[in-house]
Image (cartoon, rainbow, N blue to C red; front, side):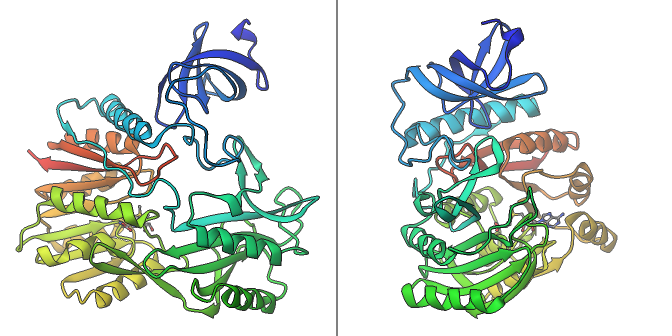
Length: 455
Ligand SMILES: C[S@@+](CC[C@H](N)C(=O)[O-])C[C@H]1O[C@@H](n2cnc3c(N)ncnc32)[C@H](O)[C@@H]1O
């Protein structure tokens, strides 16, 4: 086939090469680059072209002609169609090896820093059932109302995966099935027509307490009592596993964040990471794979090499989790976080752990650092754990202005970590070592910790 004529919807035969960040295997055809999903290196597949962006074609494998010897049968029947997992056809030990290689290649290629140590990836203790938070969308078809996730490549279509989802623990799958039954007769919100009102089911789970907070997001609250009845019914059916229930109102149906109304039971659950206890409220950020988070926090501790007289700043601190984990080894910790609910949880967390040397400032990192610069104070070590977009240049500029000896960078995106490491290098802050940690088995996501030191 002449690839000049490749169009979205075409089926093409491809020979795949290595996997890249994002989870696809690369293939080339007559000079064109195609990212092939649902494939492995060194396979011959038939794939459907689903997208073209910036000269790169994206394809989804439909038939495997010559499989890799590594290929396995995916555990989930929805694999391929569901937009959730993309690596269930790869054995876990190979997922880890691919992540190690992709991490190394991505960081080196983007940062152009080659002279640093990359330590071996730390596996997640659980390959499935590891997620403590999941958000499913209400949809409906001829069989009735269901809970699903977006279809891969079709962001306005759902697939009814929720009660089968293997990324959440079994108790949550049962809760989902029960909610699905109760929701028959409700009208799921359809963003294309603006009709309907019930939008998302949010589940937050404590592996420590084996209890859930259940949230329903609506675009329009018609009858609050009905959801209260749902939570009561859930609590009767699963007396040990339901902690509380809430609704959020988001008129655009764009996310589960919105006006929060607590309706039933507890407002918070508690999770344990190492020997620390943390509270999780309905809408605050918390590490999604708490069992793997222990490895992450331990590496932060190892890289920070805390001394009893050290002052630590924990930027993007969420509910104060990392700072509290490190607190007994240092003189003091200052956490900075923009979400008020997380700061509220952080203050509860210091009480829960009887920590006396942590303080938190509510605000955006850039603004708070500007104020701290004026106050003329400085830490020994700065820990950062920013969202996927990484650090803004102006934030890096401020961080180095405090002249910390070390920056410990927790990253959920190797591309932005690499970009930021290159920016730090301009100020003589050198990337010394990094370690990937697998927090998200069955997906391409790579969490890591990097140590950046003052020359
Ligand atoms: C990846 S989470 C890290 C949370 C925390 N370190 C933990 O381990 O739970 C990033 C956090 O940064 C916060 N955040 C995002 N942008 C921010 C900003 N400009 N200033 C302060 N906090 C911000 C988010 O609300 C979120 O809690």
